[in-house]
Length: 240
Ligand SMILES: [Fe+2]
Image (cartoon, rainbow, N blue to C red; front, side, top):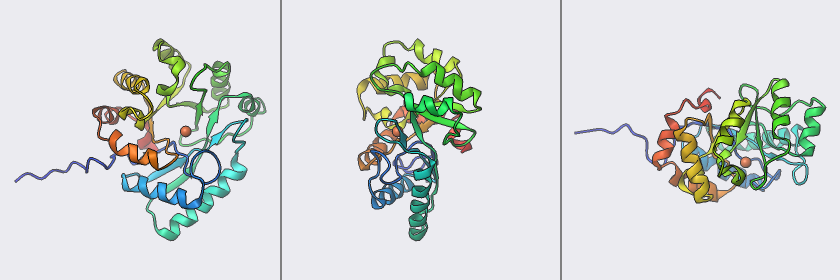
């Protein structure tokens, strides 16, 4: 008789997530405390033990900062305690590279980082950011380690894979969205995600969970062969 110690296929062996929008009423993620708790419970059922919530910070739409993110974090933590959800919740942010962000950098403002001074950032999906190189330089000179959120989702990079290498050479770590692996976003992002994994260019995996549709998709994404290849990389999630 053989016993299998492999986890259930719908349960992730990755226990730390560092990209999600589970704090309520801050961005296009969870709208209410009930939404937050439901999403966190689903992520817990997928095997996550630690979540770092990363609300969008965007000058045009989401002028968030520690002043409203931290109180939301405390509110959700209290609700989690009441429900005895065995997950550790922290908060950082996902910064959009816009003029508003550049002003924060020029003023030397403390940013919402996670782990080893990592700062998660994103750009437009369509157009390259004119601020990219300057932002990377400024972040690094402030002692932060920049982490590009979902590099596989930027359409402007899809046809020039060498650009990924150039960004990496500037000292940027890459965070892949697990849901890219099942083609949840689009076929192009799936192909680039696979190529980035094959090229060992990924340091973090994230759920980028905003809503139920993302937790549902995760079950399928976790069953892909590339998810297992992703887990074979020396991901920094394990150090969080
Ligand atoms: Fe995100």
